[in-house]
Length: 251
Image 1 (cartoon, rainbow, N blue to C red):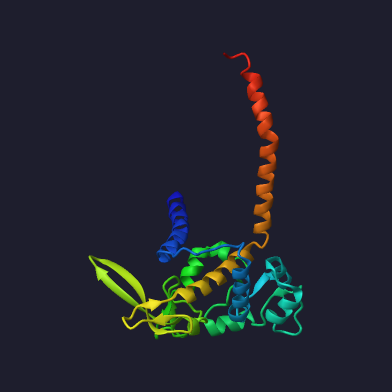
Image 2: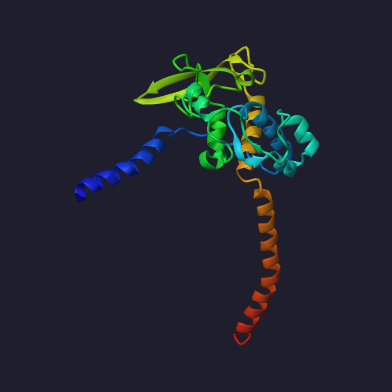
């Protein structure tokens, strides 16, 4: 019985380890700055236009966009496309989860806290890691999420990439090569790709996803700095006077 239980516990522990190992890829550093309101506004616009069609953000309200410098009128005109939706409503979608599972193989997950669960670097790598794969139902695959069910919704901006795999001394190296430029990428005469503009677009979207996971983080951090400064100003003089009192008889 003890031997069987030991094997069972080992199997349970091995499952998450295998899951992590399957996604063990080098991640690109995401340039996140949740105090850059212009970036957050661009990211919010991208999210509502490209992500909110299938993915919901059911723990985020539209009116929280006022915290990043948008007025209620701007939110109504630029971020809400359903006339029945109010500024105070949650960011939900009309797609039925069962329909999403049938069409895409799995129901599109809620993205409210995806940056906290996956990490900003993973999202930044994922959104730049789509490549053409005719073996997949959507025609797309991803280096960060093998056999992903989601199509590449930003392909018009990025263009088409292909995956090149090279083997050297038993090791595989996977690289992505841009073969068809999009509206935000360029292909030089030498075949080199310039993805600077697209990378900035993805950075804005990831920045907003990070912000959405904790909209109060900027305020929380500011309060923390103020509290630390207050405690320093109060206790530093007290600590100095206490030190003088303890050491006054030491010559």
